[in-house]
Image (cartoon, rainbow, N blue to C red; front, side):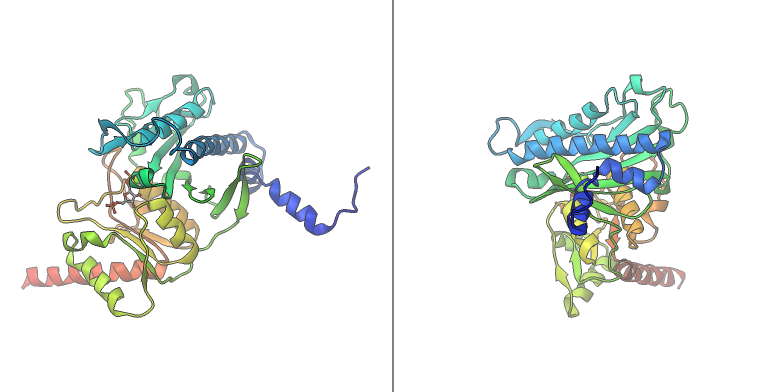
Length: 352
Ligand code: AHM
Ligand code: MG
């Protein structure tokens, strides 16, 4: 016979401890349909990738061949680190023989990676940045992984992946893993933003915060001010504004996931604007800016290039980059107002 004598609070704690990621996806979808089961299984595989990467990172300083560069340069022209390669392969491995994902596209690979045995039934593409914030790797600071899931459209026989060159509102799920003092997984399937913390004793991600809402305004601005003289005057206007007004504080960790996580929870704005040499900025649309834009909109915030919502940007190639302003809606709008003002001034001086 069931024991009903347990106090309600311990029942509640137990229930929370059992709210794993895969269960949460099913709860969100309120369905046990094949599609819901697929999405739940998919998130479970991403969680496995997160655990494998987290395990390796937690012992990185003790193991041979984990830290440092490989000597290769990736498709982005950036030096590749050993952990970039490992994490990229982890995501591929966890989706082999899953029947879930036919195609993976990552910041580290020039072209999408196909898993032919999954293709007849695999209806999803996983886009990901395996290790975000690689410069933090060798100094044991926070890192991340970013992911996005899209429905596979078309047969894609020549491997051109043209169906991926669509706006970010086509994403059906997105999220990130934060490798910090604890490992967290934050995700959305278009029904709010929820965070999970890895309980190492269970080896499971357990729900820690449901329906996260970003405040409409926050005191934090997060940007690499070392680029000050490379930016457009409008961005410098904004930075001068926060310097001259009380109530702003700067925070920049050099890893987008960590900086974004802070803004998501406390409000404010993260900026990675374009520079004179690189007007499109540094961050990649499909693996970085669009997934985080999906999350911030779900949390009640905004993400913009400065002139367009990130989720409306249509890339012209897989590795397209965009400038990024992301965070509290009032703070993103304030930065945009400086950009608009300078653009209007330019138009007026051209028409004179
Ligand atoms: P990565 O994915 O190759 O690590 O590059 C992206 C990272 C972001 O995590 C971070 O916000 C940004 O690059 C930092 O760049 P910078 O060193 O120019 O400030
Ligand atoms: Mg990155």
